[in-house]
Length: 330
Image 1 (spheres, helix red, strand yellow):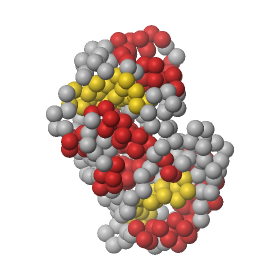
Image 2 (tube, rainbow, N blue to C red):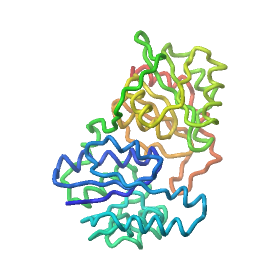
Image 3 (tube, one colour):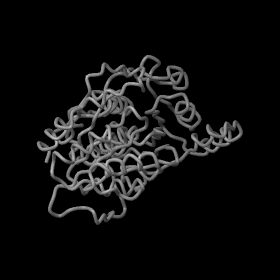
Image 4 (cartoon, rainbow, N blue to C red):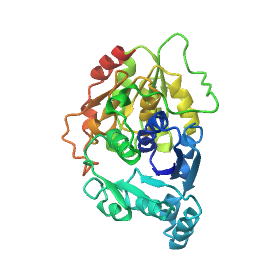
């Protein structure tokens, strides 16, 4: 059986979908899996042993240029792949649904109109699956795949998953310590109200003796890292890392502390201890708590259907609470 999974972006969302691969292969070795993804995220997938082919698209570039010609050209290119027995849209947005429909296949599957953020996406599928949008995103991915492939997997197996991200080369960082626990801090996120305040991060480093490394992905995040170092000079700021570099570095540390963002979820994927801090996004939905991976949510009443980007309640999470959980994980 040959299938294609469509999950275009973003980093954390792709990670939350990739966990299904090990269960597909565990229960059906005969399934061949291709993955359709945005060009920017292909390195997340390229070394995964359970993926046969990676097919990249450039929908973000097309959207930026507002070019119908480039869109039709891209969709025409997708017609050259396959045919597949099944295409599964794990994103269920209109853009991913259109892409799924253009890929030659016997069957196109996605969430139904009551289960998707963009309800119109469901009209592009010829088979749908129902599971409320506000349910845990990892559970949704898991149950969609089990439904699609009739896998006899129990949800509890997710809590005993194997690490599933890989890097071809080991990233060597001279700031890693052989004597102290190594903790990664992640100051950045996709929007400002998801970010844990600089002063709170700095306070964590003063309350808990460890070797701290800060990772960043763009100029704004580098500025946040510099501000933390201004208050806490003992922290180490990493160079800008590729996706593979991130995976390798995170696999070598003892703990990650960060907001609801891709690099924090890499820790979950690698079974590395992590603390994910939630303010305007729902912790119960956007990750899976394990013995190694904990969350702290603000007291904000979050609506997963309508995220309030003006909700800065993450700042109310006390650094002493973060440190308390960090000590238990270390």
